Structure formats: structure tokens, C-alpha cells
Image (cartoon, rainbow, N blue to C red; front, side, top):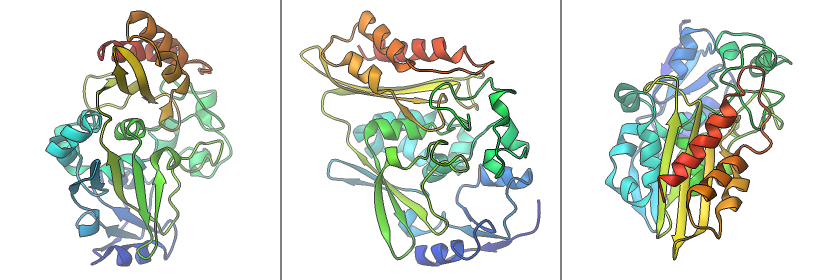
Length: 323
């Protein structure tokens, strides 16, 4: 790891000013669970680290009218243990609890979980792929056991976040700041497809900071679950994950939100699976139909075809647990 200067700004504006000076040479440090690993492997070589976890504007969980507002530098353990989150958006608490280990959740932040870089073997070993400014995705014809089966190409990474699918299912909004100017974006539009730009995973500009996540309360009468399939039972990234929220009325599905993780370069909203459920009773047949619809159009690579039946079965199992 190379030497770097550590900067502790007094305000969010100061942090954004530092961040915008020299793109690529100045980076934000919140929990550091992803960034420091990249620095050790020479994937990132910043000259200055700008610490932001202490900034008041990025801290805390605040209940609001019809939901909660979560500062981007709030630790995942605080999200998991928050009574307000568990009451108003239990799906998010379930997903946050699946991240890493207790030690990681104590350090990692919810903003960092949304903005973390891919876990692709080629990217992490510094191959000159799309993510490093190259013009090839080595996983397309190489080691692709854990890569995308949906919406892949030209890069076939999968987005590694657990909280992202839950937040998409909940219809959250993210707030982004330059220190002097703010904008709000629906979280579904926060993530970038490799078809749009294979070098990045989100819309943040060089001088922008993710400051807050606004999470609406789950609809009355809804039930939700987050299911994560992994190689190991803990401390691993998803082979596939399902964030499901279903609202029923009179025993019939009135609304459904089904978002997949671990199978696409961004949290993948399974719109066909949602449509397959609406107007039906949530029984085994409906769950199976939704599972099949969730993987419609999947294009597995040479070594990850197992993800298709795995995802299909995981969707069905998640839905049946809500019946």
C-alpha cells in the first residue's frame, strides 16, 4: 500500500471540495471495508483519503412521515438494530443483517454497501478489463461461475450489495450532494448498467457524495422477506438473492415487488415475476410461475447456468414463505 494523506474535513462542503480536486487521486473513506482492501491489492492508489464517517450530515436514522431517513455513513449494525427500521421497513433490516459478519457490519456503512466495487476475480486481480479502462470482459469466456445471467454484457459483473435489492423493492430514494447543490434520485436510477457505461456501477460524479437514503414505510398489509443463497452460510456474497414484498387483499395479491441480487450487474427488478403474481392467490402454483418468470430471458455463461434453476427456486421459496 502506498503512502497517502489523511484528511478529516469539518463539513460536507469541505469534503466535496477535496473530492473534486483531482479525480482518481482523492477518495472518500467511510467504513473502509471495501476501499482499504482495494488499496492493499493496488486496485486503488489514492494520494489523499477524505474521511466522512464523522460528518453530522451523514449520520443517524431519523423517522419521518411515512418512512425513515438514513444517513449514508450510518453503520449497518445500526440499521439492523434500529427499531424504526424494523418497524417501518423490516425488509431493509433483514438484508442488512445478511452482510458479512458482525465485525464487518460494525464498520461498514449503508452508503458504502451501495457503492462498493465488483467482486469479479479478474477485476480484483488487476486484469485490464472494462473496470480498469480496458476493452474486454475476461469473464465472458473465462472463469464466470459467479457472474451475471441477466442483463450482462459487455461486462458480466454482478452487483455485490445486499441492501440494494431491498431498497429497490421498498422504492427508496437517494440524496446526492456536491456540498452546495443537492439532488434526489429514485434508487432504481442510481445504478448504471454496463450497457450504459461498463466502467462504473452508479451515477455519482467525481465531486458528488451519497448523503442519505430515504426509505418509505412498507405498505399496510404487506409482508416481506430477504433470502440469500451463498457458497458458505456466512461472510460471503450472494450467488443469488431475492428481496420480495407482497401486499394482499382478501387473500389475493394486490401488489408485488421482487428484486434479485447476485445475478445481474445491478439490482434486477423482476417485473415479469411481479406481473405473474398480481390478481392471484399466493400459492405453490403462483410462486412457481413467478419463479419461472423471474429468470425469463436469462443468458447464462459457460459455468454459471446453475444460477437459473437456483434463482427460480429461490424466488418461489421466498414467496411461499410469505403465503
